[in-house]
Length: 322
Ligand SMILES: Nc1nc2c([nH]c(=O)n2[C@H]2C[C@H](O)[C@@H](COP(=O)(O)OP(=O)(O)OP(=O)(O)O)O2)c(=O)[nH]1
Image 1 (tube, rainbow, N blue to C red):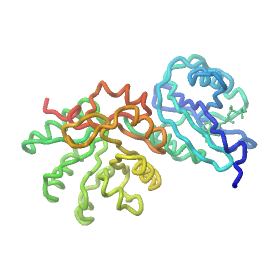
Image 2 (tube, protein in one colour):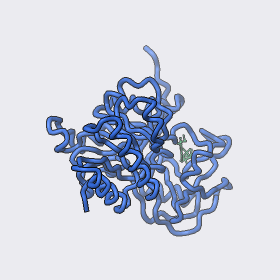
Image 3 (cartoon, rainbow, N blue to C red):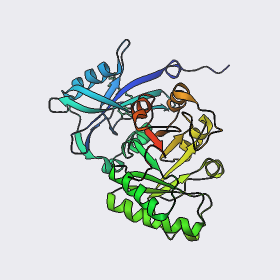
Image 4 (cartoon, rainbow, N blue to C red):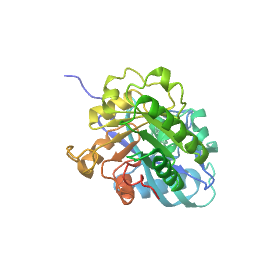
């Protein structure tokens, strides 16, 4: 029978802090050369000791490493990563308030970096989903039904006016030509608002897709199943309904997934809701940011985040004429 090395048998629980400065920058530190993943940049933190809460561990580690005290945190993402020699569970929280001025107490170099610039630094392999999570908002607006183009524009303007910054254009009832016209108008509005537009259109011919340069794609479940590699189309996410789907999305290197239906939803009345407990169980095993979808309302955002989600995705909650 194969033997498992003792250090492989146990997963190391690590409290990881994304310390923010209120100007959109986050703090990164260089790991010592001799340490595991040495010489790479990291988000400060360390192992959770027996009996410690995540908050206590993060506060202790950040005091030991940076000389700051943690005052407020919010969950970002949880990642289980197998390095071969060891398995780590990175429990990542944004440190939104702290006291003191960070300094490298152990002599480690520190840098304040804008989130957009993080991909320019070398991090351990486990950190890729953390960078994805930090680049995404906590709400994803999916476009809903509309009686005319004017109504569509009103609904989109209203959503953008509420600060929604990621929009998925889902309008299966339109022809390819009509869809492209709407996509171009949506793109103009999203660009003006500093939001990103994702096209959700199965089999949109390449020749047509080239006519509108949206910020990315959202793949439906069938497209996810048939895809051999991640399309080169910017931000790419997919509709998932199972652990297998989430694993496939992560293996393809997609940027996010939606997981549905969490609750009963009018758009898919025949689908059985999975509930928050099952949702949390699946998200715990996912290796990419996951939005909760299906019957979501704005007030579900806290529950979604507490269940490990990036946030919520919804049609009805965000799509309405003013
Ligand atoms: N703190 C931190 N650890 C990370 C990140 N990414 C990543 O893969 N890790 C891994 C590297 C290590 O295997 C593990 C953290 O362990 P550590 O050695 O830093 O923990 P520690 O501060 O408690 O140190 P020690 O007890 O070994 O001295 O998590 C990250 O962004 N931040």
